[in-house]
Amino acid sequence: MGALFGGCGLAAAVEAMERSTGRPTVWATAQYLSFARPPAVVEIEVVAMVTGRQTSQARAVGRVDDDEIFTVNAALGTRADTMAGQWAVRPEVPSPEVSPLRTARDRQRGTLFDRLEMRRANARDLDELPGAPGDGRSALWARIPGLDHSITTLAVLGDLVPFGISQALGERAGGNSLDNTIRVARRVPTEWLLLDVRIHAVAHGFGHGLVHMWAEDGSLLATASQSAIVRRWKEHPS
Image (cartoon, rainbow, N blue to C red):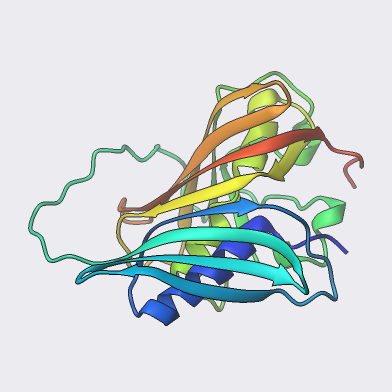
């Protein structure tokens, strides 16, 4: 069995902080320190560091027994303000209905990925790698049936920079996330999320990039950024 998916750790932590403070997440950053594997149980402790009139600063630590697995810092709150705008541009891609399914790797079967439906809006499938290096841009349509598009969904689906690294390099490679930062712009109802992955650089064994998360109506919901240890895959496609 694999280790706890980093995005799930961040998702659990921000969900706990939202419930503890009663405020929505604006920004959260996770640092992954160790691995948690089944049947381990991760316990999350939330500490409200600062509570203001409109914004809370909080910290959550995930532990298995005495071992610290991840730590998350966050700002939560909302403000009434009429100023608003959106300047990021969503890529033009085929709709989810005509985009082909993303094939899971052998090691992903029987894990969280069984709960996800992902379609390749702009991405190569397993049998197309290795190949020529890409332009650093890739995109997936994604949804988690039975789960609304709360902060939990955004945090889980924002952990996709390692996927983008394989697409950018044109290699059967990925990596382990060192961190994950999510910034939430707005929350609107949408069946599908467009995960717009942008890899900035891979150097010295590490990769860096971000994921813009778009609603079907073109609203930018959130953006997530990561650094990851880059590793070649060990298994072959099935």
